[in-house]
Image 1 (cartoon, helix red, strand yellow):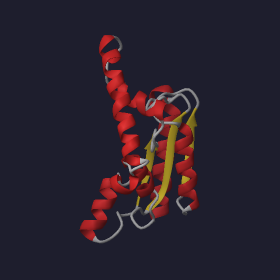
Image 2 (cartoon, helix red, strand yellow):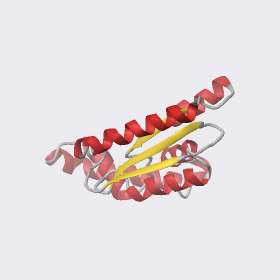
Image 3 (tube, rainbow, N blue to C red):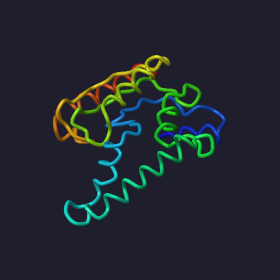
Image 4 (tube, rainbow, N blue to C red):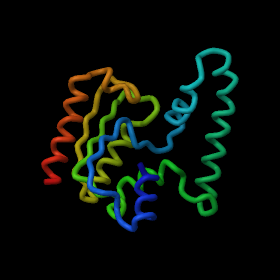
Length: 164
């Protein structure tokens, strides 16, 4: 979404139109094991994963070195930029937002999502959080479909009434 918000502002000179958002298992921040799990997930278990693993670690270390000590040269990393833009009141006009996330998510640390939600609330966004104890990354709907869809429906209904 951050590219949509930034591009819309650049092209039209105003914030993206009023809307609601459901964040499903996002946004995340850099964390070694979560990032590693996200990058390795596309490779099948076995020899290929074993061969690819050191390259993934090298990519992660290179990115860290590039953005942390040399951040003044490389600029903001994409996850930090995404988190910042999603909470930028000059770019984002929302009726409400809901964060759906799980403690069993190996790719995005649930603490990062809660931190982002708290920052959003402190900036005046109408925030709802729904934590699913046992569902992995973007599997909340499969884990507890009635609860997931009820949350989405309530988010939409709140947006409709808020926009009127």
